[in-house]
Image 1 (cartoon, helix red, strand yellow):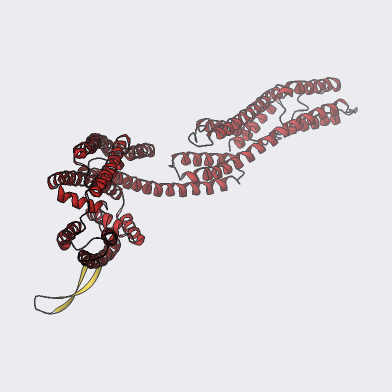
Image 2 (tube, rainbow, N blue to C red):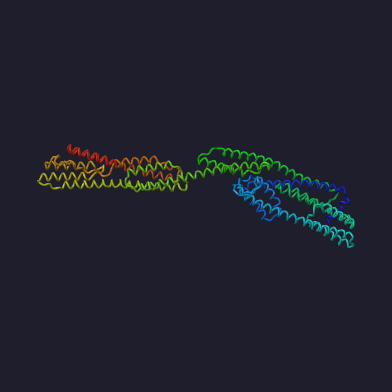
Length: 638
């Protein structure tokens, strides 16, 4: 009904309707163009940004997914952009392979020639296969679309024939008008027709509609009613457009505005006295939305430039890091963290102008890829060195484990210290093996020094036993019953002296007191028995018992061990168990220092005891004792 009235209105008021129609058409076309261009640019920019961050393999996967979705409109919109992005990517250098190919030589003879050609780029092959499949889909869709347009053309031509028949119909006005509305609804429902037929088809359709209104001669009242309804509809559209002014989504409000303009065109004419008023209201609200959109995109353009400046600054920072000469693992790790942080910042920055996006991203990504390639080469080289160091340390562990079983503590201690020194000069090994190999080496060292400490502990226990033996010997001498035979008594005293010296060293704290007791009881018995010191002196060649343990050598070995531990207490300062290892070293140092002090006390006691003995014996005995002491000292040094 509205469409019919609109056509009649055009006939009755040609100047008024032509002006409105032209203004509406012009505004709609302008805004449709702006909307299409804006939406397309925004969408294309986002798609290109998304694809430009993909690798060649990922783009192939994206193309496969698009084809699998079976959405032709999405295919048509995205595949050309994906293809351009893929084609602009640098192709990787392919490895070559040798083939034998038959060629014709200068003499016209066919011969086989070995040639080196690049290997097949599987990614390129897969992409071409998928793109050819897309072209087949596109061709098939276009063919179907053209077939549908031809079918639509036939349907509309049939409707035109129905309109022609309706003009000659003798039915009632209601019947004719119902059929007319039915034809109009069908016409709207039919889709596109071939482009070459659009104008002729439209002109024929409107010509017949005008003829129809001439035939039925709709009355003036009906026309006025339609104009009033159209005015109401257009006022509602004005209100809707004005509501869009508070919509924060610029693109959404602009897209809805285009739909309102389409509806405005379809509504038709309004009363003449309201035509300019309602149009100005509608246009004013539309212009405000368009102005807001222009300001939005001007601001967005400034933001794009700011983002570009920020990304150029990040690129320059990456360039400076890549240009640095990195020598240590710490420097590489610090540089890697900086690169990662800069890349994270890059991702937080929004879009930049389309013309600069691909170039700037390629430069940025190329520098980062180059950095991580150099980093990989460095880690591969370090890995090989760490493997060599690991093998060296394994060899040291094997040698240390062999030394740990030996009983020649002095020589073994020196060799073990040499191994420890050699260990310190070997470089690092892989982190997951470092503690394990160190614990193995330390276990071998601990085993040896524990055995060595146990040996020294046995010496200390022997000295304590010597004290008990000498105290027992003193008691035995006190209770001994001498006879009237002087020679027998001399022999008895000699035997007691011999047994006394065979017992060995005493603890430092008891030495003087025990020796004093012994000397006093010897002197008391000599005086009582009237026996001189010469008579009970040890015969020439008879050796006094000497300690069997090389005290001085052990003290010297302990000094060396203490110095080594003090020097190496920071040996594993960078280990995660550094505090525990230091604590163990401190405990060992305390034990070694205590053991050294005990041995020094024993040695001092031995020297003092020897001096006391010398004062009791004759010159010959003293000489013999010195000779024996020298012999014993040589054993200790050995």
